Length: 243
Image (cartoon, rainbow, N blue to C red; front, side, top):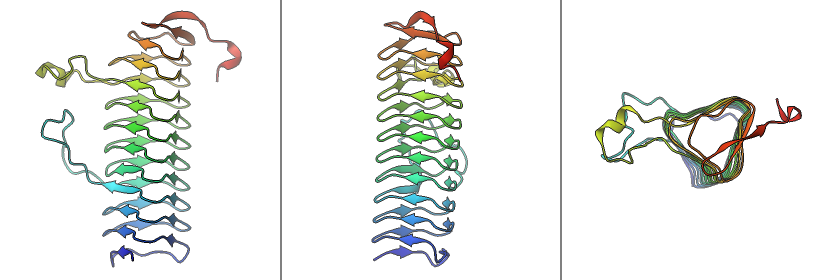
């Protein structure tokens, strides 16, 4: 049995599985496929041709803890998902996110509020994207990576599995940290290898190649390869590998 609010109008081309909840004011385009046990919260907008797998939660209202660093300010707009997206099983996308057309948010991924994701993006299985993050077009974030709050990833960025970004040099022990919280800025075409760690406020320059397992403690220069603990210049990126 499904619950679909009377305010929701479904085109005849929409397919809905079992035990799904669609709340007030949700707008769903044509040729959308919705799996079983999906929850779509109030006001969510879903573009034509999008597929939503079993157990996904879309437009979840954020409820941060009293001790959370990132506070809610003002009204949070409804979730918007573009055309021809794929939302994986048990993915959770919060209210206040905007997902561009032809983007994949894979199984078990989490996208928080106030996040903007471009077109043709891949958000891999188990990826966590925190608040106030911007992700450009055709960027790929592989499985189990963590994109911390207040980070920016530009177009054509590649993030390998298990990459960790950070945004707080004070580790929650001083009020000073609130004015200095800043995640990574990863510029166009940069690539970050598996299990790398990027410290707060670091800028990864255009076309940088960060080798797997690196600890990035300083801003990088464009088109360089950096590696090690801490990461240091190794060589220039082969011109054949540039965008």
